[in-house]
Amino acid sequence: MELKITCIPGDGIGPEIVAQAKRVLDAVAEKYGHSMQYTDILMGGASIDVHGVPLTDEAVETAKSADAVLMGSIGGDTTTSPWYKLPPNLRPEAGLLGIRKALNLFANLRPAVLYEELAGACPLKTEISEKGFDMLIMRELTGGLYFGERKTVTENGLRKAIDTLTYDESEIRRIAVKGFDIARKRKKKVTSVDKANVLDSSRLWRAVVEEVAKDYPDVTLEHMLVDNCAMQLVKDPAQFDVILTENMFGDILSDEASMVTGSIGMLASASLNDTKFGLYEPSHGSAPDIAGKDLANPIATILSASMMLRYSFDLDKEADAIDAAVKQVLTDGYRTGDIMSAGCEQVGCQKMGDLIVERIK
Ligand code: NAD
Image (cartoon, rainbow, N blue to C red; front, side):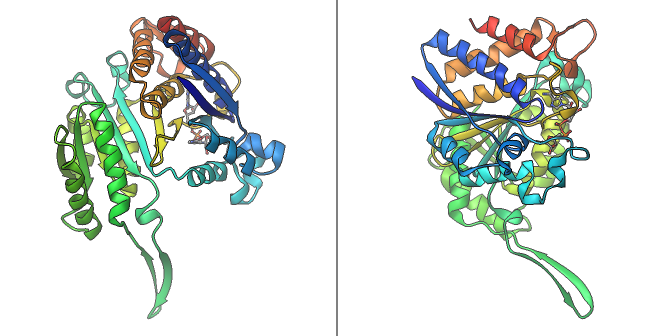
């Protein structure tokens, strides 16, 4: 298979971690007989330095012409970098918002996995963490409270603020379909999270999710109220497979889920549109404090590349090979500084890439 991938190395540690992810993809391509064609584009601070803007139309067109986009991270030190003296629409993050919009990415996927080798980093009690967990939060990204009408008015001398939470059934249906499709590639369970005891938007959410579920009789559907879900994530995270939820609930729950893994350098993510196209990136930022020092953990980006193979190209066997190589490196006792623990061998970004590539070949 020929895979056309646009890469956004970005800023800070971005170029270092994307370089390692490309090496891992190349190793998979060689082993399984695929060919990878990469085109790099500039975004964020790197684009500001060259073009004066965080994202150019040409860069967007290049991304659109690919089958998928693999990104490192963008942004600099927000207190010292000159990029943050620019108006908000010209700062690095505006590039990310711009590309998400231009590519119509409405489904955000954030896996939260606790590897038994890293259980010590999990802030939960041992009797909970020893069971491990492997969940994926699927968050609707372009609707709901963050995109509804809002205003602040003064009535009878009192300031009053109004935000509107709106979803129509097509917005709910397209993310539900993605959620069930992805559950089919996993443990075949969807937990749809809402606040249907209070909100009309949640009652519609629940009704549409149930309609979609009829097309997936092999996938188990359960509903959970968002407040209960927030508790269950720390009480019994092993119960979850795919958590399907709207924008604001997903924003909060995905951060909670990533915190319980305890390892920021391990967390992949993807944003998808209604085709197979997606943008894949680590959940962490550009870590300017360690940039250029060969200290970054490339695993979140490497696991994002694995998600790209699985969800944009349906290359599940190849994605499994990457996931297994990452797990093997951890079992063999290698760690970057961020996940280092006693008795393990500390390695840099490049060496971690070498070790994963070796285990794929
Ligand atoms: P950050 O995630 O970059 O860093 C937080 C801490 O985690 C730092 O100590 C950093 O060294 C460490 N860290 C992060 N990733 C690591 C990795 N792969 N390996 C080892 N250690 C790692 O968050 P921040 O410091 O708040 O933000 C830095 C910049 O990144 C800001 O400009 C911010 O806006 C940007 N940012 C970008 C994205 C994105 O590109 N999607 C996301 C979040 C933050």
